[in-house]
Image 1 (cartoon, rainbow, N blue to C red):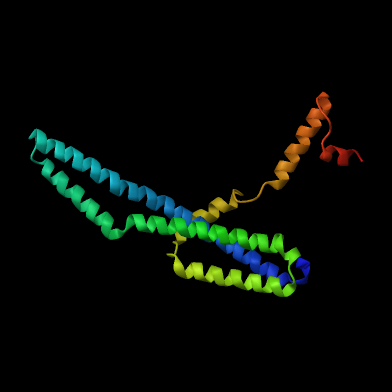
Image 2 (image 1 turned 120 degrees about the vertical axis):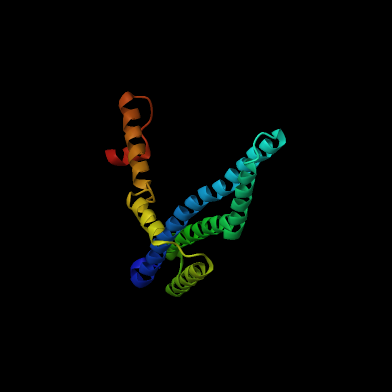
Length: 193
């Protein structure tokens, strides 16, 4: 099917792709911050316990008992807040939204040509339903995380660089041809026609 025959379906796939891009970006942003926090909640109390335990064994400073209490409370707080679980939830969400983003993109850019209009409509409907299921399943993001993701996305980090690769290949082929070190590539052959 020609995608121009169903612009509303193509636009819906593009909307899903874009929504997934921003949502995944926000989840990745939250995951990075929570991962740092989770590591601090794990390793700082462990270090505090080692220091206080060593102090008790050496019998040098009884005030190190407070350090042991604080480290124990920190571990208890970390467990209560489920810091590790929240980190993993955001990581999984980011991956799932990224996967759905690629499915939406491939549906309207590649597979649409192999489908009838009805098949494309069903595929688009399934993508919409999958997006809604992911939104319901995973924790919400924050406005701050969304804005951080948006800022990063606007830098162009998420744009495919197919055209850059083709330009580099053409430049390399021309350079090789000028130096007389090889046979012109297909790109040069077409350019010389």
